[in-house]
Structures are given as structure tokens and as C-alpha cells.
Length: 254
Image 1 (cartoon, rainbow, N blue to C red):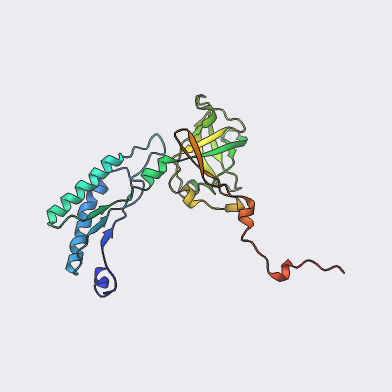
Image 2 (cartoon, one colour):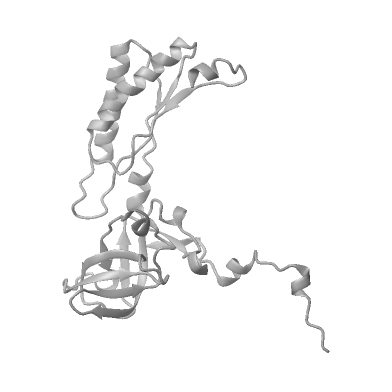
């Protein structure tokens, strides 16, 4: 890369960027990153570049279920900073401007997705399904790479756990499962199911699969609620549809 950039005087190289993964719970990868990136800074010097910025990316995991145990943001920041400082001091190179991308660790826990329960279906000896008014169009992560979430009954938070329920979406796909075998209270039609930690990747990956409109988004703070994304309508979905003129003419009477 640097060899190519050295032959392109119209391009300016300010720094380097790292991406070591996603949903990482261990600190060791972030500890090792400083030394790896310091070597890239030294390599750049050999080609005449003095890089002033280092972006260590992100990757810090969040808690989707009770078994997830990610480090705190404060611990992650200290680990990254200590690693970069130690690596630069060991190589006798100036400290770059340090950038990071906390992304999911900030936005993920800031959002919950609410669904309304519809019908239920029991398959004797196998499992009980509860259908909700959403699914893979608003959260494609479970069907795409088997992401696991925790569900709550928002309108009856104190109700005791009584059943093991699989929450199924509305999209007529066998893989449209939001959560498989979730421990929940006995569900009723119109119960409100909330799934936590859906702020990262859900809406950005949402689609109109099967012509399903995307839901609204509401910002809640200090007891006040504000609409920040309007709910899509069928008219929104049809707005871009058009027919060739030859097909849109009214039929002539014979």
C-alpha cells in the first residue's frame, strides 16, 4: 500500500486504520493491537510518510443475554491507550492522534424493539410458537448469523416465568425466528414483547422483505417521547412503482 502511495503525489496519507473483529469480550486482542499498528507506522516512515493518525477501530462487545460479560467502555479505553502508548515508546516514535469507533457499545444498549403478540401455536412435544408483528425485516441478525437475544413482556414485567416460547416473525419463512426457546410468562394476545440491545445494526440492516413497511423509531428521555423516524406506509412502498405507458393506458371498449 505505502509503495503505491509513494508513487501518487496527488494522494496524501494521514494515518492507518485497524479492524480486528466485532462483539469482542476479551481484552488481549486490544492489548496486542498497539504493537501491531506501531509496526505499520514504522513501515510508513520507510516510504517517506509520517503518519499522524491511528484509528484502532472498535469491536467491543455488548451484553445481549445474561451470559454475555463484556468489559466496560472505560476498561477498553484504558487498555487501548496503554497499548498504543507503550508500543510507540518502545519503538521511539511520536504518539499519533488516537481515534476509536465505539459504535455498537454505545448505540446497541440504547435501544429496545417492541413487538405485539398475535397468535400462538403449540407443536406437542417439540415447542410452542408465538407470532409477533415483526421479524426478519426489522431484525435480520438472528436469521443471518444466529444472533441471540433476551425477551421481556413489557406490559407485565412482574409476571413469573411460566413457559418456553419461540418467537416467530410474520414473514412466512421457516428461518424467521427472533428468539428460539425463550423463557417467558404465559403470553396473551396483544402482549408487548421487548427485545433489548437492538440499537446497533437492526434498523440499518432493516428491509422491506415481502413488502413489509419498516417500523417507527421513538426517542424516550426523562419521561418524554419524540418520534424520530416515521412508520413506513404501503403508499411509501408503492411510491416508486411505475408501469410502461403501453400498460398504463385504459382498456378501450369494443
